[in-house]
Amino acid sequence: MAAEGGGKEMNEIKTQFTTREGVYKLLTHSEYSRPNRVPFNSQGSNPVKVSFVNVNDQSGNGDRICFNVGRELYFYIYKGVRKAADLSKPIDKRIYKGTQPTCHDFNPITATAESVSLLVGFSAGQVQLIDPIKKETSKLFNEERLIDKSRVTCVRWVPGSESLFLVAHSSGSMYLYNVENTCGTTAPHYQLLKQGENYAVHTCKSKSARNPLLRWTVGEGALNEFAFSPDGKYLACASQDGFLRVFGFDAAELHGTMKSYFGGLLCVCWSPDGRYIVAGGEDDLVTVWSFSDCRVIARGHGHKSWVSVVAFDHCTTSVEDGDPPAEFSGSDEEFHEQIHFGAGRDRANSAHSRLSKRNSTDSRPVSVTYRFGSVGQDTQLCLGTNGKDTSSNSSTSGNPNPNSLPSTLPRIIDSAFIATGVSKFATLSLHDSRKERHEKDHKRNHSMGHISSKSSDKLNQLSSTRTAKAEAAKTLGTTLCPRMEDLPLLEPLVCKKIAHERLTVLIFLEDCLVTACQEGFVCTWARPGKVGLLSSQNNAANSPSGTVV
Image (cartoon, rainbow, N blue to C red):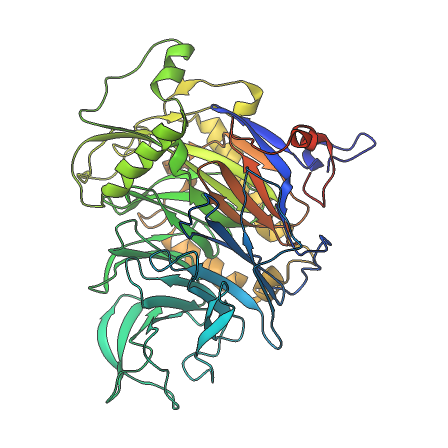
């Protein structure tokens, strides 16, 4: 809710924002939360997470949503922009004792209107397989905590598999499970399968099939998040030691690495075509990494605290196969026509389909404009673009010239905030004075200076600050971690405060984008022209609802 009594604009909670394709509006009647809508006291709790699945039922209402708040787990029909949320009728609700859900993931392959397979990871290390439609609990993995006693940080079904799933822990280990296997009554014994720089993969020694099938130990400290590439062949891991490590999943071989500017990496995602990886973390930055070149090609700023989630928006990504287009030098109107974002559902679906069919090794020339977003502990939503990529996947040779445009990122929209109506087409060359000013601002506004009493995660890791600084000094200025002045700096198209508590979720859907904050409110933002609620929703922007209006 906007601050009353003439509060500062920067502290106002925004209910809409404008991008090149139009206005995104918060749908207050589509807010999902605990049934009583009371803000959750989040101190000491695990982040609120959201998972979606489509069960392909005949009613056209096939989306299902799962989210955790404290010790509670909820499962609803998700009505999105179509109808108001009915919080009085959860399909399933579970309250856990002695442990808290930390993450979850649906299996999209096996989902039907009668049954879904949902994996839930917990703070004590266990993983549960449940069916919230049938209200069944089929299996509990790592029940006796013999495999790993630390918190589950990320759980994902292996793409294309009905039975294999991967689990990451705050211990820095990942485990590959098969739902058909048991976990045994004794601690597993391992045999080294493959070893490389700061990682090792072990198989489980057993006379009979048991879990885990594999154990990965990656880096130092917690493994905060991992993400499979769109083709399922590669695995990107974001670790507390600040490293992004990208592996060939089946071969368990390291493809490439990157180091954060400072502190740990907390989140990671792939572009829809698998050509780029974006990571965010404790340096308050988002970093764009090229898969083919295995190097950092840009950084984005805008956040004033840790970046908790990064995600690509496949619906506003435009794709053109063929020869790279010639340099554009027309009017602003013509520029809008050339790289127009989100031109309707058909275009969005076409772009998503064409991108998903491409893989990381496809060498055909393609012209793509990407949109990605991030949310952080500063309660801000930032949307950015890495501009128009007109390169093929061939690697570049030699060291990049900081004063020239990288071949993988020839142009960006160098505008501050689209909401102001300012948009200009510019190259990536930055003035030295601007670089120096950003260096000073970034150090002064670093997330370590934004630690509050509510941020228990940050306080628990203050003791490792000196070690982190020493490690950062070793890699700063190398290809693992280029200096700020050596890379293009991406300006946010949109940077808005949209919550009172830290943001933990950002998901792009066809008709909307979904965010969630640590108070337990899951919000739906309708894309331009996609508002489909009752007429009373038209005044939603002026009506308070919970804490995110």
